[in-house]
Image (cartoon, rainbow, N blue to C red; front, side, top):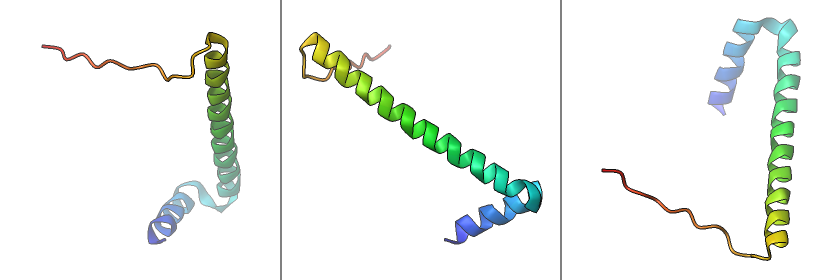
Length: 66
């Protein structure tokens, strides 16, 4: 809790009380757009699996260099 107050106080000092609400609104929109993008990506992944007929997740192979 104290970390949030500290970050808020620093933001208030840097941006001032007039710009802080608009920055908060922009941050909220950015987070919501990011979440929507993640949901869209997950939906596309499911669609691709249904089209290919595979319900398995693709395997990722790790190669060691050396």
